[in-house]
Amino acid sequence: MAATTNTMPAGTSRGAGRPPARAKARAGGSRRRRNAITAWLFAAPFVLIFGIFMLGPLVSSFLMSFTDFTSRDIDNPLAVGFVGLDQYAALFRNPQFLHSILNTAYFVLAGIPLTTVLALALAVALNNGITRFRTAFRVGFYTPVVTSIVAVAVVWRFILQPDGLLNLILSWVGIAGPDWLNSTTWSMPALILLAVWRNLGTLMIIFLAGLQTVPADILEAAEVDGASAWQRFMKITLPMLRPTLLLGTVLLSVGFLQFFEEPFVMTKGGPLDSTLSVSYFTFNQFGFGKYGLASAASYVLFVAIALLSLIQFRALRSKD
Amino acid sequence: MTIPETAPTIPRAQAERTTAGGTQVPASPPVPARRRRTGPRLSARRALIYAALLVAVTATLLPFAWMLLGAFKTQGELLRRPITWWPEQPTLENFVVWFTELQIGTFFLNSVVVAVFTVLGNLLFCSMVGYALAKMDFPGKRFLFLLVMVMLMVPGVVTFVPLFVLVSKLGMVSTYPALILPFLAAPMGVFLMRQFIAGIPDSLIEAARIDGAGELRTFLRIVMPLCGPPLATLGILTFLGSWNNFLWPLVVAQSEEMYTLPVALSLYSTGQNATDYGLLLAGSVLVITPIILLFVALQKYFIQGVAATGIK
Image (cartoon, rainbow over all chains, first blue to last red; front, side, top):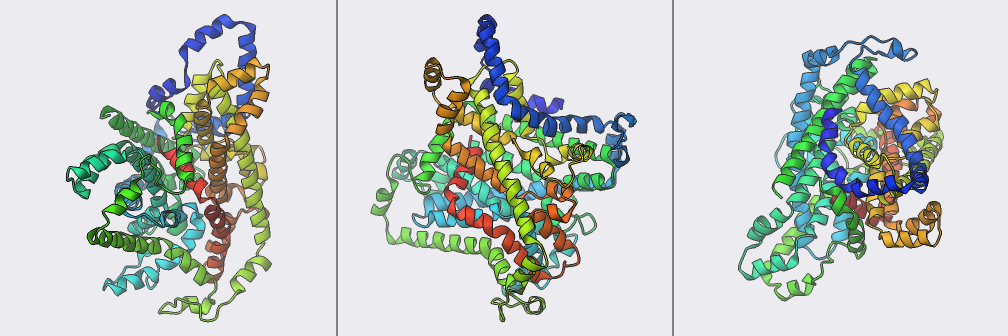
């Protein structure tokens, strides 16, 4: 928890707080108090739902990670034993958990650059390369984002069969494709392919919006000065797009670190745990009834996400 | 994190740009300028870009085409190798099974009920708290907003276990409230509404207050009517999230009459029907068709929403 609260304060306090207003509030008296009550009434429905279904579970999960809570303790949660950091120690001695960390890292390190580069190429092509059918292309590339992973998994499992559509297409160019989902080597690349396909559209839209902020007159001036299209892209567009690029990768890495649905619907984490992610490991522990261990694993993931966001935002701010 | 200061103006700027039809609405008109120097070299390059994009978009949409074609094939044809493209004897049998033997009507209704209530809850509650956070002063405001921001980063698995324990203790397993309540007021929606409402001029709200309007009246008559764009964004994104939500419903909808569409499809694709590809492909078509139709009809708002929440 400490790690997370630290990541936000600068931005949030600037946005939400108005210190002078506080001083005024003190002077105000009963009218101020009535206004505060009104404000809290406006916030009340959200605060109730947030408190019960989000904040409460977030805190309980933290507390649970220091206990030996199992599914048998649901009826009497206060009777569980306090075990300190034992669950965390057990976690880092668990070879399956360590394997899941490596798998998640593989997925993130391969998936993010791939998605980012492809999305950027598409965004630039749509923004600068063509003048017609932009909307049609945008809709086409974005369609995978809106569709249910479960439905999509059905057809992808079918396409990825050893004698399925993908391998048929590969055979046209002389490649003998593997049995994607049943190979410890190729199952992860197959899931990365699926994730890139599903996330490309979102990132492309974010980059397209960012490209609009690159002033056309600067690009034109550079063109008049004889800069080639590639030089203009590298020297003007890319540097001006940096905040958008970093933001896109932060959003994507927060999502990719939680990598779960793709293996859940495609491979069940297999074969031989080769697609078992940290989220999936956590979900399995929950299924086995080991709630304490599951909570500890989920907090490790939470801290990793918070740290990564912090590092990326620091990098973004320091160079601006 | 630069979000809070800059974002308020973006949703509207973004809205204007994207509503004006696509991506090309900068102040200067670049199109005529381009036309002038369209030589043979340039148009060859442009043709190449079109060709590349066409190949890429075909590859992107191929799985959907494959799904649709497969849904009309017989089991025998689906299992035959080498694979066939067009269904040789198109059949509706796969769809018929969904509507007769399996209760797709129930699953569809469950998905709709859950999505509609989730959307309405988010529209109302997120704008209410967004208004309080943007335009009122009250003790605890900064802390509340901080909590919302922190919650945006919390992975789903962190709250999953205690949430399930809670729902079990409340006896809500396999009920609509279990499917709806946890998603009724999403932090992302609060953030979106707060950022937009903060961009509404204070003078408008002050004027209403001076005229003697209470906060509720100001909220309903002044603020809400201005919130069309972010409400559209929020409504669409919430509907999408709810319609495709999978893991939580899978865990709490434990009786068949509470299944949502993705849950039903997922359970059938691992159960005794696991190899009935035609049935599963038809089910997939039935799950994604409503959302694709909605997306194509409202694509402007979908894309505007993604851009508004993404760009800060």
